[in-house]
Amino acid sequence: MSALLEVKDLSKSFSDKKVVEKLTLTVLEGEILGFLGPNGAGKSTTVKMIIDVEQRDDGEIYFNGEKTEDKMKVFKKALGVVPQDISIYDDLSAYDNVRFFCSLYGYKGQELKNRVKEALEFVGLWDRRKEIPSKFSGGMKRRLNIACSIAHSPKLLIMDEPTVGIDPQSRNHILETIKTLNKRGTTIVYVSHYMEEIDAICNRIVIMDHGIIVEDMEKERLKEKYRQQGFTSLEEIFLHLTGTDLRDQEA
Ligand SMILES: Nc1ncnc2c1ncn2[C@@H]1O[C@H](COP(=O)(O)OP(=O)(O)OP(=O)(O)O)[C@@H](O)[C@H]1O
Image (cartoon, rainbow, N blue to C red; front, side, top):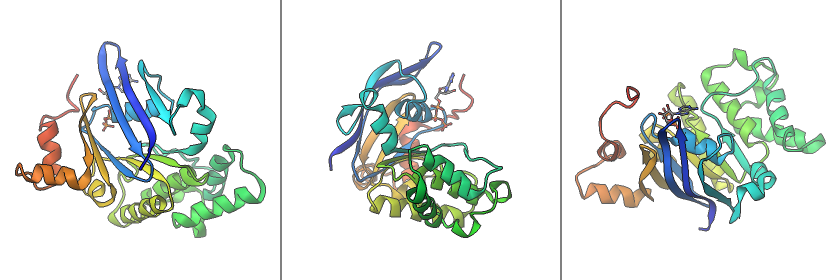
């Protein structure tokens, strides 16, 4: 598999605190990469720098071998982002939400209609397209959030905790959706705290802590490596690598 996204020596500080420190990471075309780390590890800051909503202090980002800042339009068109906080318009219908986000990529007319329909069908919301999301369950809102991010057929989809606060049925539906998207050719970076989700869908796992990557390995190799050291689950491996201290109490 070839490199789709390459991040080299990415760094970021807030005030004097180093939040991301010389982070280097390659996302291979066609993979589902699980991006794990405790609260405050620097995952969201890394993602925000990659998608160009947070300025980096240092480092380089390449998409398809070219610096993203040199080809920002091409990169943005190939990128889909499912943000941690649901970002849909509560007073627009499900259909109009997807239509709006897809139209930002320049689609119009019949092509736009086709894309909106396909995205809503894909997340199982076509029958509810005329309703406004304020009436939706948490799971339906999350699925609509995904539809808004995929209607333009991104090559790279970055999902930041897309299943927070939803029931197992909706979670399962979303995980199946992600696997199908991947089979259709979308490369996925999946940020989550849910080990069982990462285990279920990802090929490779990157674990970040205190601004650096502490492990980056193909999933089965990672499990085998730590099984030999007596750690039998991904959660045990995670706690072994990142410790058991509470992170949300750090200054
Ligand atoms: N805009 C900001 N200003 C100051 N500090 C920030 C800012 N954004 C993030 N931080 C700090 O940077 C650190 C890393 O935060 P980040 O959100 O990247 O972590 P995370 O790994 O995504 O955590 P979580 O799993 O809780 O989402 C935290 O200590 C956070 O408080």
